[in-house]
Length: 447
Image 1 (cartoon, rainbow, N blue to C red):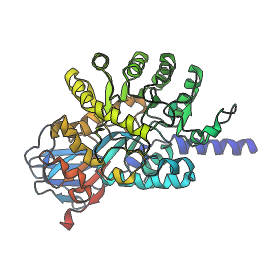
Image 2 (image 1 turned 90 degrees about the vertical axis):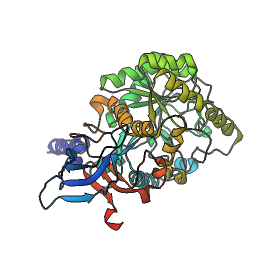
Image 3 (image 1 turned 180 degrees about the vertical axis):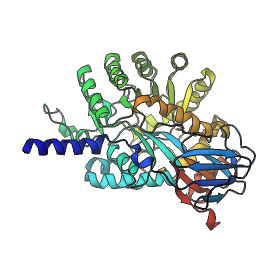
Image 4 (image 1 turned 45 degrees about the vertical axis):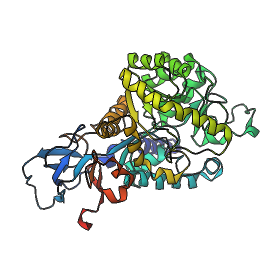
């Protein structure tokens, strides 16, 4: 009897955690028609069109009026812009709102509630999808997918995989040396996974995949916010990185790496990583290597403005200045060699700056036209998300307004190509936000 009860319990738990995250997403809803909208097609705005959404997909796009039944919701566009939902390719759902000290010491349920509030705020800024690059986002993702709370689609990496003293090592000095077979608080909470051999990399990589990671995140150089490892340090060997790449490939997905320096970037590419995050200190030869290997470059517009991550101590300020100085050069080299560039913000430990997430699109016009920036934050970033392949939690086409695509849509009060700063005030300028065919916000009737 006990054995049967145990089997039933195991089956129930398996159903809970293995059930497709799309179960909630695929529940059909009433049809919606956006009338008289100009569609952002990745380069320009179209002539006025009408767009029908049925269920969670775009069903029809026509210059003619679309006839539907009485239950259909009809939204008057009045010539406004309909465009795909925005995508942030470098986001940390659990590290946005709390300070670093609060994130390290507060009760985990409090941190989770902060993350849930930030997830809803992220969606209300028009970011309908995010690639979460480090943190215990699996449970929050499940809650969003099942309709328990609101937020963007999340592509979770799980814990950042880091060597001892690496960028993702968040332990207190009092915890060193580590006791055998004892995990630190950040490791137990799923913020980081400390590894110091290929075997440890393999195990901790598989643990993230087991929990639902859509890609793996490794830290292979130091960083500005690193508790210990300076930016110039090279972290994890080529063999260790390659072990993670193999583990990811066995699950049908890929490895992305935190890296700033040429040496760290080259090691990652040699090992088979598909995406470099940051990389502002890359030299020309390394960028050329990225282009030749088809490596994605997830760059952030770190230029030292009001949107930049702030640091109090002199050492981190100096490191930030070094990164800011390299940002212009990085984007110039990316353009020169045709590297595939993704848009991400990497906002950490500051809710006020998170509220300016959309304002960073305007910063990007230092290097790209507004239309190029919008395409990068929609169609291009969607292509990057699709690298998750068999581990993609949301199969379907994103980042475009076309028949058959998933209905993640924004109705913008104005022309975002002419005024990309519209995204700096999403509460006013994003009149309708739709995710997966569901209207999350609609203030058209109030105008």
